[in-house]
Length: 252
Image (tube, rainbow, N blue to C red; front, side, top):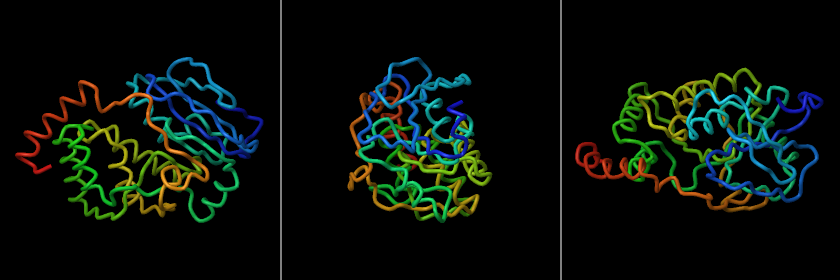
């Protein structure tokens, strides 16, 4: 657990780094109102002000380890009221404590919109095309949501997540998000499951609009990943299968 001296007082900013996918980015203009943590499944050296947290692995592979702690900050940061998750390729360029307080006035969860798409159908097609997962898993997931009456016209870029993560409603929401992600019948794409979880729980998330990391750079800056997961053998196989069989039978 992180510092218990700051029970429910400070914002914890964290990222989850595994397998050398991202290098640790320095923090410009460190905010004393915040604690900065890197969660990893191995011991690594970190630049100031990052602190290392190596929690229970739970038998996850690197990707699932990342997603588990990305989605479930309450399991390691229960002494903090608010958390800000950032992907490993997101740089912090200014103090953000006051900004975080402003974003969560009317909701316990704030997130930026997706920069290119606004629904999970289009996102599913892209996921199939680039080999995020096999087309039949994507099709199964989207078909299931459609049968339940899901018709949510928003899509989010889940690389920056601001949450009051110990709020019981947020915990319920995150539990559903995680269960949809880890379900072997579904695609391993958290962005597909999040809109469904929000709709299912009838949760009023705050859409912060256009990504500051990509377009504003007032508080964040988007960087390239240190490695490219789209070039792995596993991803290439999925890509080939999806672009041949998947395109032929499902039109993905």
